[in-house]
Amino acid sequence: MDAPRSTDNSTVIKYIGSKRLLVNQIVSLCHAAAPAGGSVIDLFSGTSRVGYALKSAGFAVHANDHNAYAHNLAMCYIQTDAPKLIDQAIKIIKDLNTIAAGNGREGFVTQTYCLNSRFFHPDNGRRIDAMREHIETLDLGPELKAVVLTSLIEAADRVDSTTGVQMAYLKSWAPRAHKRIELRIPNILAHPKHLECSAHQLDAIDAAQTLSANIAYLDPPYNQHSYLGNYHIWETLVRWDHPQVYGIACKRIDCKERKSPYNSKVKIADAFDQLIDSIDADTLIVSFNNEGYLGREQIETILAKRGPLVVLDRDHPRYVGCKIGIHNQSGKKVGKAGKMCNTEYFFIAGDGAHRVADAQRELVAA
Ligand SMILES: C[S@@+](CC[C@H](N)C(=O)[O-])C[C@H]1O[C@@H](n2cnc3c(N)ncnc32)[C@H](O)[C@@H]1O
Image 1: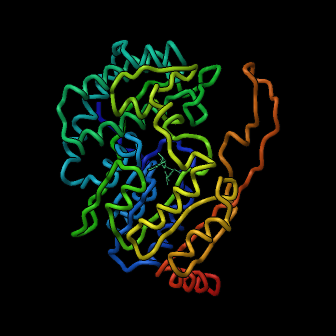
Image 2: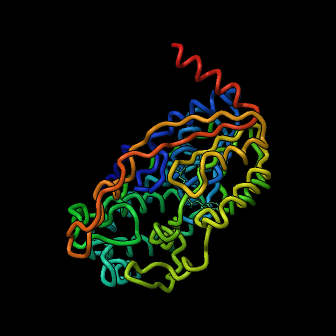
């Protein structure tokens, strides 16, 4: 059985706060702010969609995220130079699909996420267990392992039974949960000519103190919802550490301790302020929206330390959950759907701000 290629350009997992619809604009901003062949640090890389688009556009990208699953995606889509290992990846993913064609083997995933909770159908849970155990026996190098694990995460995401976060699962199986899991070859990229790209798993402040580039792109969390809690199953699939779990969603026990200051109303302003002071880049591009813990004026005050500042805004459709509204256990609607749109901001600070402002004026005039 051949492994199909992914039809999407970069990672396809459902991810709250992903900049999927804004990547083209971010690439344009970077082109306006920095010379061709410039470099970008993505300090909160998440799915790596932004870094992927920048790498495709010829930037040297250095991605960072403190969660292991996001680092794994960045290893696959940012750090890996496709020509070096694509043939090996295709062979391994093909073999894994042969394993997935069988009945699998009941292990941690089946027990925890299919029987104790209902994130995946048990038929797929057994296949995920068998594939993940097999990957562990292969003794792969870090980049090849990251490509294979990304393929597994993306395949599992296509047959999950959630609304896009792993805080809860659906009461009745999502139709896609009944499909047999099938891995695809991730669309990994070659490095831009003569430019290295890298992936890091550091707290943003440590990454800011370690890395330097022409541009730093910042897309921090903006409210109380922890990404580790929202995507705890991907963390476990990558770490494969069979953690103790708790609660209905069977979250990893370390979700209680591994916290980000950006999820805290009390800590976010100081953390952001210190981060901005630590970044070694001429231009900073910050994504934020009007529903976060930091207001526009607060962000402007902090960023003004970096020199000229330009702010762009645009209305953006909100996440699917708010459109559905709030339902109780039996599926009855108990709350109203929230607003359908929020305002997404780009703050551009430092040397590139004037160049971005000029480029925007030209766009408006054209
Ligand atoms: C809004 S998401 C980024 C989304 C990303 N731009 C995309 O398009 O997929 C924020 C990311 O910040 C990461 N994060 C949260 N706190 C962090 C910290 N203190 N240091 C590094 N990464 C952090 C989370 O794991 C999450 O992936």
